[in-house]
Image 1 (cartoon, rainbow, N blue to C red):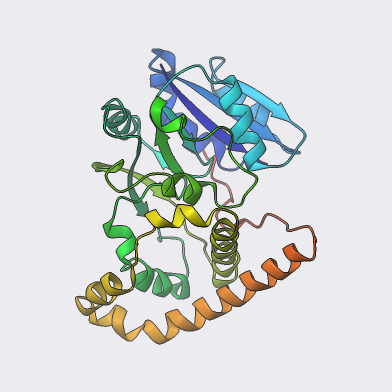
Image 2: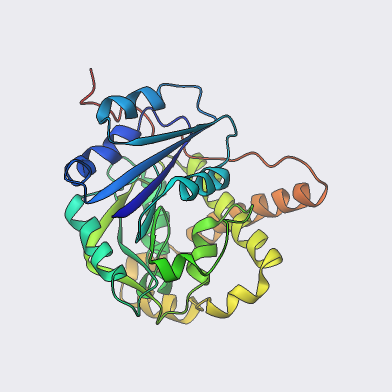
Length: 289
């Protein structure tokens, strides 16, 4: 049986959207779902409990995604093992395709293709993504960004999730391109920020996480692909995106500056708050009374 681990911190406005498409597979015992409510002060746990009595709920007062991932692992029984963010959307059939890949001996890590739903995002956010999606990063075996799955052998590559920000990048870089695979006939949906302020917030967190990871685990970056040449090649195919490069670099400079400020704070021993996008967490559980 496959184990699906979902860390959830105050996700009352997103959790139903993500779990509901997977309820059928849960009911026919194809997999187990473990929701780790970490530091929740809202109705997340109650909403999950109402969705199905077969969902295993683990609660902790510690508001930490890494702590939640490790708790989920301790309570999980099956393999392959899937790790999902609470605010993404994936259909049961797409999940099944990833599980099938992970049952192959040669593939240790897998994920579906990433789709970005920009329908609610502002023009400024859409312009940024118009350029960013041309990165060669999206032409390689990308896993992470809210979803990654590991086979039993893949999960044995490390003991516990380390205390870092970029858990998805940590997992991805544990494996060479030959060891990980993207299911091109499957996808999951990520909902980018609605406004530029929240875009800068989550991108600076991501950049900070990558710098932190490189500082703590420099050897992992042997599996890091260079994306500069590929990005230029892709941009040449999209003249509009190419013209948007100055705008993209201005926003990226702001993001990097903010991330470096966090790094300096971390060196001083200051507490680094977990920043997340709140603009997409509004009235998402529309089917709930």
